[in-house]
Length: 513
Image (cartoon, rainbow, N blue to C red; front, top):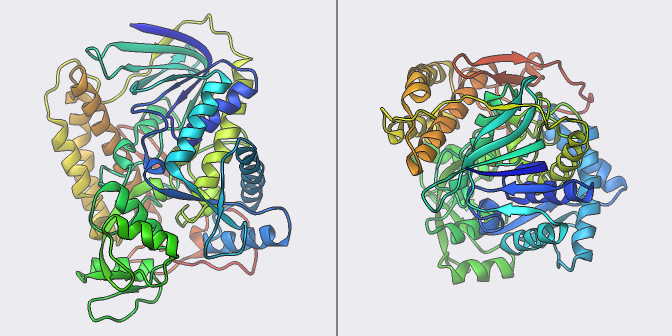
């Protein structure tokens, strides 16, 4: 086994993980970052342009926060929204000083939203990590967290993808998990690495989750490979949508998804797409100015959804001491409420939460005694001998998550049916999944997908209303009774409980997106 020791271990090498690593190093910590693929070349950000919520201080920022809080169904926190905007504003200016060229929103007021080329952005962040002295270990997926006798997280262990899958272990003063969300292997661009690994690691150590009912975000993409799909997804923010009869759809994305769920075909026209995006899309075979492009719905789960690990304070600490979290693995209810974190919110959150988690982890690491013995946290899918095929587990999970009838439209009956099937599979995942090398990685991934699916279904069943992206056909309206967040957790037995209600301005209204 290859062993390392460091002040801060960052698990995940996307934007949030990179910002966490750079920030921890800036706070004086030694940092190791491990990534299941190659940091800077994988994940959704690597497959297209991303937008950032970027507003300087002033009335425009205050108005954006007010509108965002109302649109999120009152589950957001205006103080957190202001903090994210301020942190992002400062870090965008820092990126500009690094030499990164930033483009303004082609369809909005100057500097309210900016766009970054995802691949270039990640390459620049990888260079920033190298310059900060961060040790980056690519193709080193984490399997388990390490904890001391008091349950304080003290590192992680995993496998290296090459040379026979040898084990590695990193002893650390604190850990930042930044592994992204979970898209259930739906095929959405860049989400092949977003399989809920970090959620599973953290929950097995006792971490709580929040907002998992808001895990049903779908994207509309044209057919094609990952890169054209990402370009098309960006272009579709500006394109009008039409049904089979040629009638334009009101409500844009929500109306289109509802139509697809009813069995209709939906098309996008690129007439109103900015010229630069239209020409890039055309080069990738997505049609010219007058052509209408067929669309399909692809589940992006918690990647574009809201649910994730619950953080307890401004440093993005989780409910487990020594464990911090950043990016899509964290619940984004504080900034987006019950609606998707797309449209600039997700990119801004990755930056802000990465900075806060990295700084918080560096500070925590200075307080711990690393001489204490540690142990691996036990978990599902880690058996030495495999007795079931992980593909059976993944297939069952996808059957109950990917279809619009399972995740876009929900009811007590369908949710209870899914819970019964998924719960019935859990003992097999816990005791019969396993193996060695690549088989062990696939087993662990299947266990993570199953765990995330169960948390989403249990949370969706308890929230007996429709709010934001959570739509219940048996409870079509929003209720003041449910203007609260739902916590969840547990492995063998899943639990869900309401958090304290959050205050809401009188003028804010619930909106089902």
